[in-house]
Image 1: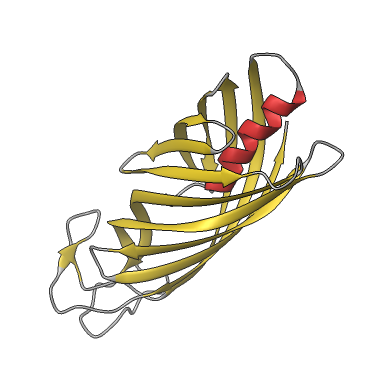
Image 2: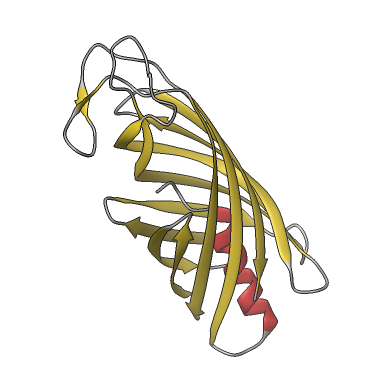
Length: 201
């Protein structure tokens, strides 16, 4: 599992708290992430998720699809969803200009901190920082490079940040985009991601 969208979480809070005065509300989202990872191989072996040796990580090009459900009670969120076929849970706290969200699934999980401004009632712009233990098929079994198309399953610690914007239409549908950079400290890899978000309630 990879990090969840910070922009979608903050927009979920905005959407359910602008829609009515009911204290308990739910929003459903769709996040499509395109990611490019630039990595380097290493002569020092680590271990994959099955404790076999790996040598660095492969350059990655992938697309993730997440379907999160956010349920808010005032400023507190409890939710979950699927990232591809992997279930996850999330907990968070959100205000107009600040938010925190944690997520987890099996051996992966992380936390994000968001800062947001509201230039207009419909346009929301923010920054975020995150740290996570991430899981993916990116490991190399060979010192001379990856012979596998998908790589082998590994987990790694990464941290990073980015920016997002979200826009509310007149039909209570929300859409936006997010850019994210992260650094993998276990395998010394740089990853860039672009996310398209869609949200309704």
